[in-house]
Image (cartoon, rainbow over all chains, first blue to last red; front, side, top):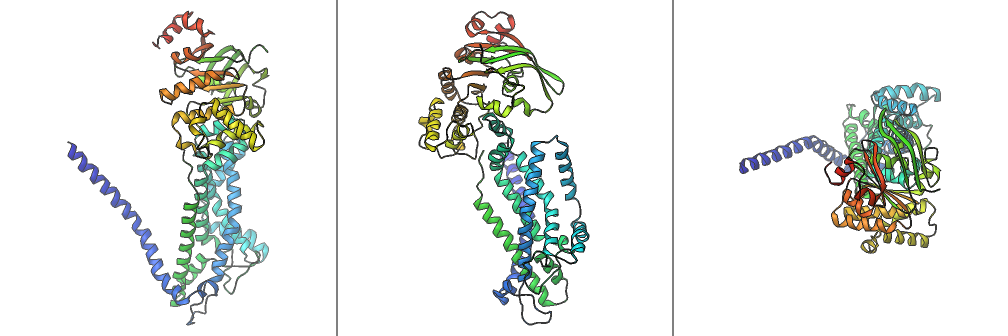
Length: 281
Length: 250
């Protein structure tokens, strides 16, 4: 009896372990493929890969991805605070006043926005921002990214706030805290790790977003534009454009750009995991 | 004001269900009043009505009158009202992201009890001593509550409630989830407090009620079955139900 239970237990653990490994295979395959192909091109180009503009298609020089690298960080870092502030306010509203009609409307709108295809958002921003401004711009990209990230951030933050056990809310009220103080001094700090992880996910998603930028940022690859009203580029757009060309050099650059994107994501992910301490309940 | 707490014809409905039924009771200053009764009888709900934590329950409707220290509870701003009413809950709930020191200091600072760091240090020490926890944590005030035992956490919650210098202290089965030794320490701390604060404590244990109570109210199914001075109720219960409850038969 005892041994059969033990065998079953071990078989089950072996099954779980193998399924876990199997689910990680595609992830590692992607990471290894990007690393192997990307390292070669970055090694060939050297530091200029991060500081130069892309070359002509038949050039012997690898050049670099500086406009896309700058553009990606620029539009993501400008859109991130907008997304975080709006999503945080919306999630506080929906968790603190769940039966309020505005709060319900915000909840429904945020969730339905998540199901709108990103290319549709890009088209909407094209007609409402790009056309009136008479040109592509980083600003249009920022607006598109903010709109796309908003529902993800809202879901992450409201889940984080709802995950705080009710006993801490009651404790806060019992010592005379009002709603706002309770949110600021108890709910947000207790759920900070989930919130920061949510911000990270939103950041990563925005960095990797392609369709939303198709009709908004303008793919400007001749140099770096700091002006938010001027067109810019983004790494995912560059990868999408270059990998679909017949030029071998451009395909190589696309692999290098993919490695840069992956490395940036991993660096942020690891540093946040290390820096943000979990609150032990 | 003859009484610290006066409740008259209190009725509470949640989603249309009648939970508290025509409750009337008075609690004298600087006494320990114990509300006892079996699980689900409405003890905790009554306690939460006194400091308006019942507001957190959707669709709760209250009729009747509650006065705490002469102030009408139902027409008061609940956030201001709660500054005079400390509470310790059934499950220990120190703030997990704050240190032991900060857990106590926050309620003193919030309620204007201490402003300077020195005043704050004094209040924190006073509250921890009153909760009989100071000796156990004096060397680790900057540690987090997850390092404490369940009983120590509950005494930390008592210290947090005391640091706001409340005039009324509500205790909702504070020893229900801790070991007997810690429960006894907490009881000792509670009894030693009644010179400074009026206490209403909920328990389902008649033995605990007998050890600490000056006066008691027995609730069953939302009704008050019996109330009066502890000695009278324990020695000469006026109805059969009370006698059965005290014998542990219900």
